[in-house]
Length: 287
Image 1 (cartoon, one colour):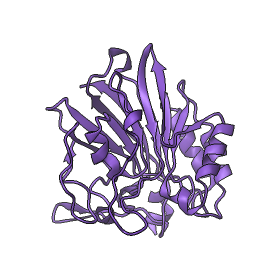
Image 2 (cartoon, one colour):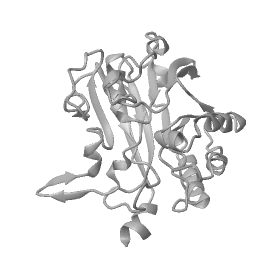
Image 3 (cartoon, one colour):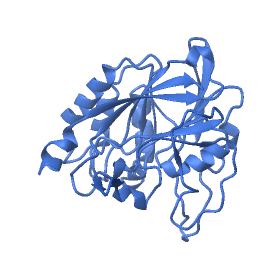
Image 4 (tube, one colour):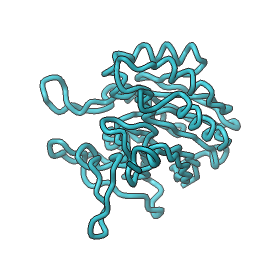
């Protein structure tokens, strides 16, 4: 009962500094607040979303991002969720991408419309160059990236976004599925922001090893991971992501990073154990 009654509503702010290769001095210290996987539904009320938004606003971030899954299914009030996240207040505005549950809810287009009506921007295979303190960065957003096509065949993720990547400024990718990170790093995208896994919702420790059901869908479960930029990804085994990801280490500057937010809501059982919901405050640093 603790996981239902307490931990799933125990929002935690996680602050982490992320080294970015070739980051302009003006962008050093820029703060991004990230929400993800809100899943407004019968188990996630508007007031609970509002509390998370208020906590996010208290962090004084420069940019706000929401990385998909506003709702769970077609019957959930996506307009109510957008009404709450529109209260996010940062100088550079609020930006988002669609998740897989926007597909299930048949709400990808609706989400984009509601974002625009609220003065926010949902990026769908598109980008925007944003200026902060006189320096620019390139913000890219994509719809949910499927690993397999309708015939069950593996397909390339982030197909067609190559022209969106800029070489003369840092690139930040909003992609709900963290499994797109290998391709993003190969393309030279310095930072990816994702959600999707919920950190597994339940995590147990056995023999000093933490076990999470999210391991079945991704090696990028929660937190910060890095891999070399521009390095071609080796062949994958079916159902897995490329190679074993490396947790953050400070020794190399030519590394792409991904941050995977644990999300706010739940799917399936409305329970969290050992994986509290998260509001991320990401601070960019020169590598």
